[in-house]
Length: 72
Image 1: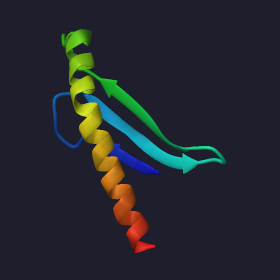
Image 2: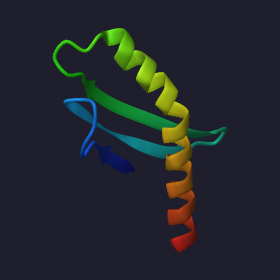
Image 3: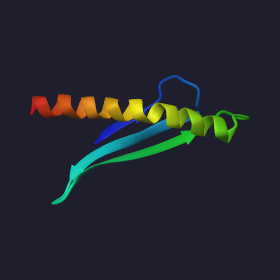
């Protein structure tokens, strides 16, 4: 489980966790995110920003998971 939260940025709240797991047939990532925009921030703008950042965020999760696996 990788927990994260925004320290500084464009939202009132941006926090969540990524969990990596597997079962008999597959590997999976669960990405749980809570976002609160600033007052007056359009929902469409928040959704667009999340779409743009999702791939980069998941790549960062993959890199951190691989780094932690190498330590064990």
